[in-house]
Length: 485
Ligand SMILES: *Cc1c(COP(=O)(O)O)cnc(C)c1O
Image 1 (cartoon, protein in one colour):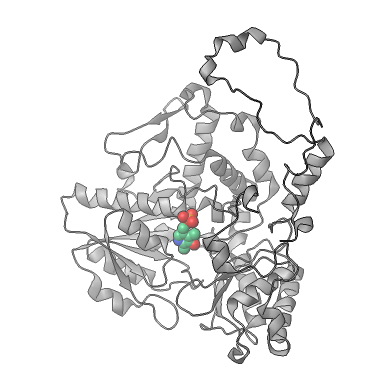
Image 2 (cartoon, rainbow, N blue to C red; image 1 turned 90 degrees about the vertical axis):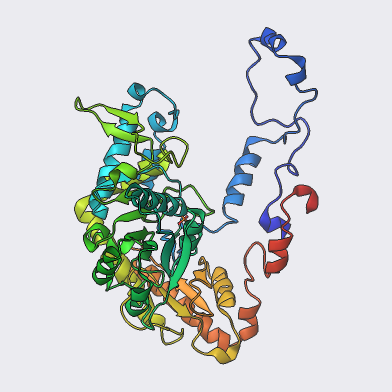
């Protein structure tokens, strides 16, 4: 590791007696005597002793060792890691929001409850659903909640044979995982060569043991599933429900609604489509919406609007038990509502077409150098199967790492699993023509370099704080402690 570039630990910068800040004198010396001796520490904590400029430089330098969407283009597929407008961060951080406690009496948090209620209505309008719960903490958590709602629906009708969930082979891994956690069996349905679900393969799988079919649209290949109306009819004829994995809602915003297509239950990833940065695995929110007739099965607690215009938190009798502590991730909800209100109805309608245009522009510009397994229009993202010229031996992983040297975050790699060298690119609606053109130039340069100088690509990255790490060693034996350095 290049310790100079990578920065040193704050403890290494510590000098005995150095001070950046001084606490006021203890004005309550007697208070200490009321704390039992067994709870008092016997020696001072080992804190670093540093002056203020050292602290500021330390953390500022550290913040530049990582890649972020604020420092460069972030074309990560399947994540809609969009640039999140700063106004939404400001709204979520308002002191009146950030200092709330989840167990405050309803009467003291009317504004927060109204925010929850209003966002729930907005998502119902966007999704074409009757009602939403905002309680789940992630997309996968939303899937589990949605499947629990589906189970409760079948159980309420005394229909206890339905133990299977049908999932396309292109599905995100969380779909079968959630089905398994919900206690259901997973049956896979195949995709056709054009990347969409094979309706002929689906038809014979549908019988009275199927609880639900889970679909993602556009699917994880970024391709719009055109046969949803037919699939919805088949699923409903079999007595099952159709579940919409809304992680890819971004290109559909204000253009088409899952509820209108025949979906019964859906989740949305607020941290993918509604302006919450989610690098590093959090924070998230996976609201679940249901069509009319399924509202009663949504989990508790719920926010309801009383006839006098006030809001309260309730746990109706028929509701599923709670799936999360309190009402979910409030700061993510605040960002989402801020995003929806600041764009407005007309602004939201532009998100999908722009994201789609940007993705198709990159795809068409690069398909001379990268292998495009499925031709045709994509939605907000698309997948290459590695470099077109396979003779160089340069892999998708190596292309991704070489991109880091050029100041770009890597696209998603080796997902979806349908191709050996998947390289999944999602530019999002926020990127300018210039950014896309520069990225396309760099991708072309790497494809060229893979032919003229493959070793340089294979040994990348060269200019990052850590270069050429052994991936397996780093995963198996990560050095996470100062004493292990
Ligand atoms: C990200 C994603 C999920 C899971 O969402 P998490 O919030 O990461 O749990 C599910 N399905 C699809 C298609 C996704 O892209």
